[in-house]
Length: 170
Picture 1 (cartoon, rainbow, N blue to C red):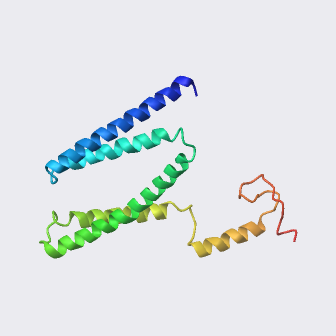
Picture 2 (cartoon, rainbow, N blue to C red; picture 1 turned 180 degrees about the vertical axis):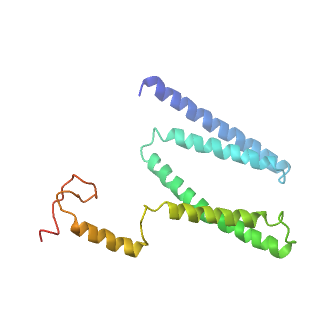
Picture 3 (cartoon, helix red, strand yellow; picture 1 turned 135 degrees about the horizontal axis):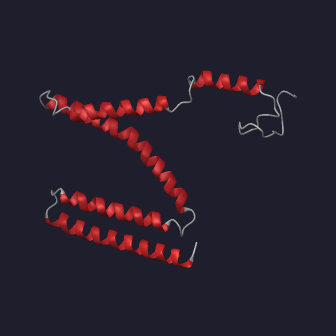
């Protein structure tokens, strides 16, 4: 990395931080003035976006921060895939009970069911082709492992690497 690249990264970090602080000030002033406005949520989103960009740009200077960001991203994605469909389905059931059963009132129920269906389809499609449930797959894997010569399959499962021990030799 050149010296100017590091300086540009520091400038962009400072720009993101100052933009986040400015958006936060605008958000607070608008909430104090009128807390029910939709524009307040927009300013809060801008504040969050600038804050996230600041943390990501600062990750170059802090070695452990990149791992923390990856972990936080994984947790966020898992939580989003699990919590959002459940919340939408619960909201849709409440709307069904309290309002008339019209399509406009059941949109959140349909959206939650659709998201839950998408999560289920991607979970099933994410398995390797021909794989069975976990118990059967484990038996298949262990039977394949024992029948494979030790010289061709390593401990990582990749061909061509050698293992230090071999169950066939025992």
